[in-house]
Length: 204
Image (cartoon, rainbow, N blue to C red; front, side, top):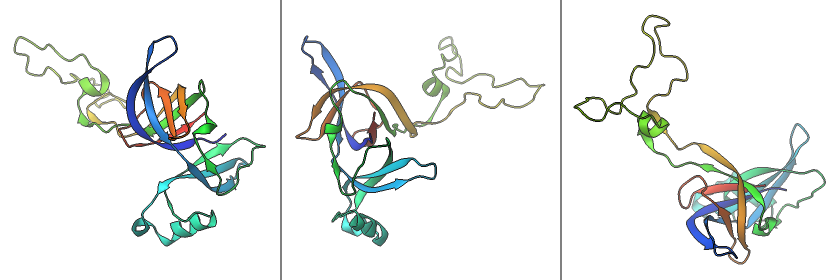
């Protein structure tokens, strides 16, 4: 089955039947229209889904024509492709909603993680740091980065300061706790990558 495109609303908590609180992430998923169904070079079927409506001033003629072929009167703001199992047919223009998922399903969520900017090794890699007292001048530096004589260079893969976050991240095996079909909301146990109002991809 394909997945859904959604938007991260935020985190909250709900209580199960035993009264135990469960931290959940609320995702506004769908409805996602099927914009295109195609076969790849390897013979696998892909379904292209759209999400939200893009403003007319921001829509190009190519995007408008692509949406018109699918029977849509608007161009989706975001379009992504999902693989489809053989034997399952989806029609162009069909609307997919959160009813694809059920309570107890295990899903994976993909999104861009929060960008942290340029950070040091203590925050980026969890280094313990140098001595923090007795006037030590470099308490958060990485220390020596390699031998001086041989090979006289920094080894590839050395953990150093640099840009942190802002990369495509996938978290697997998250559990669906609640499905709200009326409001197109999906409640997933735990946290998912990205900030509020960030786009996410949900699939089984």
